[in-house]
Length: 228
Image (tube, rainbow, N blue to C red; front, side, top):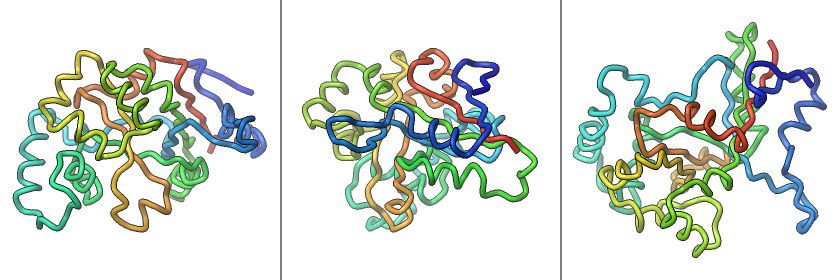
């Protein structure tokens, strides 16, 4: 196994090694099956940072977020969302391509592998699959949010659970001093989301790169690099 740069970066040399790395720490002896605790995100260029679409706007993007969400809600049809909550609107905005602070992830390492390798224009570049342990990530959350997961017997939040704890952008921003990172499942808005086993991550500070948070907590992630 070849590692370079960060000890969390793993360079793949074979299909068997890729399978091993994708399913590492996933075997549950109590269940007698693989049950991964990782969120996976595949990218066609290993140099790409974990930037949100909001960050890619450039400029004072953190200040633009409220305006974008307000106008999206203003012009979208009420039936666009199942419930009039901040998290339903944020999920729907991400789905329709509005720049948000959300990042797309999948429970499936094979879906992530597809996104890492499907772009034929980038076959000359190393691809990457990020793997983040969402259970360990949530152990770093403020106490109230950890207790919410425990009370629900859940490992990942739903939009309904988050709506009870964080009702708007202001309340989300108040978590910024804790550099909170949350993984949550969107409503099953369409078949694509269900088929791709999709869910989202959100950072309480819209200007903070998830990569920076991960570097501070090397025990919760791996970066699996697939050579060109």
